[in-house]
Length: 284
Image (cartoon, rainbow, N blue to C red; front, side):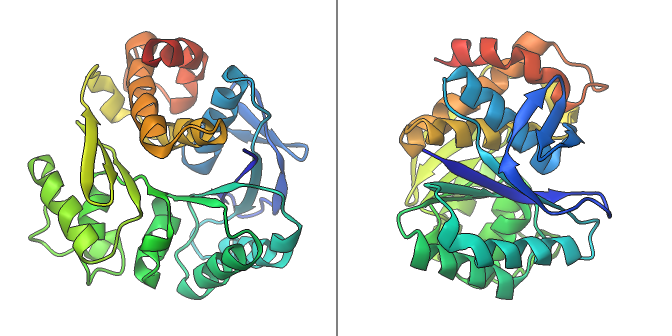
């Protein structure tokens, strides 16, 4: 499947760019610009592109804009995406770090539903927050929350993870409770990949499976391991795998990155890119 990844780069003067992505060493290249693979959307896009390459697929398209938190770059990206929706030839979207804006989220979602109604929709990070806040979570095919974000999805009143109520603790022993609560409140996508000490693969409030091994403690200290996982999932969906299978294999591969990379807390997520081919082979 052809795919578009949309998100932001934490640089004030980074322009809006849109095009196929290339990976060279630990650098993301799009429209002649170099973006370091540290964490966030660049890390997600890098792991998607590298996984796609290993699977013999063309690279995804990426749409990026600079945004340091004031939302200006996110709104530019939202508006551009709505404007060109009818020209896009993609079968799936992965939305990532964008400032939550309910108005613009809805404009993007409605444009997709009008112009590309069969497109698969994956959301993580800021865009997942606004998908839940808008009341349209159930229109999405896959969310990829960590435990803190799972608490947010379970809280029908919280407008942002910062405001999740205190009784919804980041307690991994209660993940199944949070999953059930999120579906009851219609705050979950059709599928969830809940990232944590144990990764849960869920469809329509049914836990299909989980992955807890191998476990490498040093991975917890590396920012971006959730981004790498969502990137690997995206590429497997591009390959046409069904969502539960893609989630299971991606969760395993992401864990084998730690086994093969032998990381220390000083590692960045980009340091694990060379281990991806081996991790995919181990995961099957």
